[in-house]
Image (cartoon, rainbow, N blue to C red; front, side, top):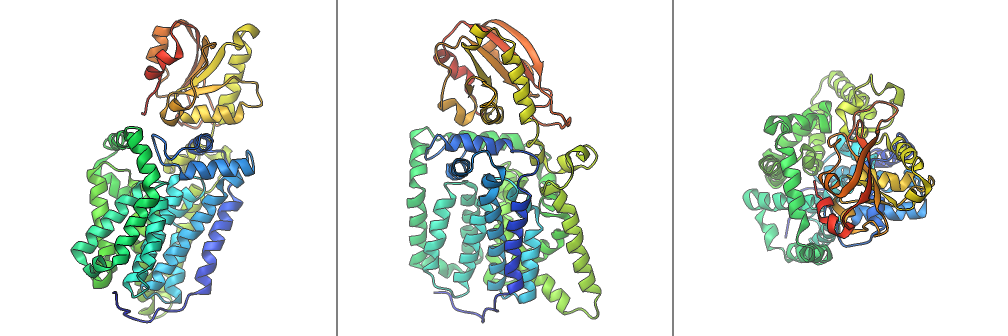
Length: 500
């Protein structure tokens, strides 16, 4: 059993208001710009219920499909769960700060720092697996800290249940939990491993996760191939130096002193040293494995909570108002930096002048889908009526396919197919389809290899452009018309299907 080390401070009402304000702000701005490519894909994926998909588990797609079913074609409804999750992340970090012994001011600082971090606002603006992953991770860390401080060890059952559900959303939390357990072994308190509720929680997590594990097994463990693809895609992005430098940008440059102070404080505190050690272990593992810099988000809830305590202590030792002024200025500047990057505050006409797209690559993938649909519609409408009846659309990636599914329903476009990831298993073109409009993104402007061999006539039709000139995956792509396919789609599908 863990022993209670000190009396917990009371909860700060001001701190508890910040998670609500965060969620409300994200809801208020949720309709800006457009759908992200992943959101469009999640809606379609969720309409094909399964315990898993080749590129991710099923939690976020199911949420997306549910919200689109309840309120069709509403970005605000789609992003409502993400806003709530972001608010809960702020709440869990605030509660963790309290468990660490944070005063009212420390709790408020923890809430403000988390609410103004890229970790919360950037994924909180869109429905992403990362959005929920951070929330689940923050909840598990809070419960773990609470138990170690003397809370009821049965709370580890709740932590196990959250972990089991989280593994249906994103596997990354498994790496975070593994780093926490390894850090506990190395730095203690090792007595936690003698608590039967830890093992009961682990068993519950596996039991809840089991359907997805079985799906992976039955489908040949596609996630292993997906992990390899993602790792290879990150190896050429600057190495360890860029990985570490990106942390300042991802969380917020002016919050870097706070979370670094939190890391130092944790490493110097025997009872919670494992939290700092777990962050370092996770960092080394991600760098060695070629992980994205954003994968480290799960390590920050504990650091932000502890950093708030460090800043609170620094302010308490101050004489005069100089340190308070510094902290206030840092908070204001943090907001000025992160809000335009995370939320659709910059007018679309000014995006070429203000470097939002360059600093937040996710935002670039919210533009161009209506224009893509318009261009494909023009190509389709030029075909003779008899040819239209035997024509389908084949998109190179899921963003294009899902966007045409979303925007093309009222344009009279034919069915949309793709061989990319989850799309490959859902539906192939019918045998009666002898022609196809091919959508190729900017990185692959040439028609695919299978089309060069299987199309009797293959010709270029149009270029893909968005009205703002934003450089994203589709800008500058090409549309091709494949006529009189010489092989069946069943025969061609293995060549059309791809994971990267």
